[in-house]
Length: 166
Image (cartoon, rainbow, N blue to C red; front, side, top):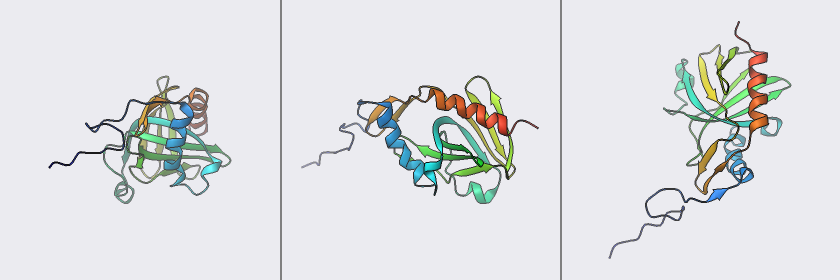
């Protein structure tokens, strides 16, 4: 007698259920990934980004998984600080340790087209981040569009105005 495979998504082929989720539900699913890594998580505005990361410092690189391409970014103005937390939205797990960039270690931030920014720290951590206004995000419970237009625009302006290319 064979055992039937039971997946939490409600499918038998391993793909996520095609349940449409609200922006608020997507945000509630992602938020704990940031909160679990950051002590004062309530003090940050959060945005979601896709992109790439690289870490030249071997000690920092050892704490990261390969092929990071989804991120939650916390930012605040007092003090100026950005925290980039690599995540896997499909599994709702982190894919490395969050990186803090602030006035003590920021090298530069610059715009790359309309929706993307580059962000670099003096220790060699580099991110190329694309923040679109309404990304479609897939989580284990289903998928939906995260409405973050105002926050994404605010982050792009914030980060490129405080640490411009020198």
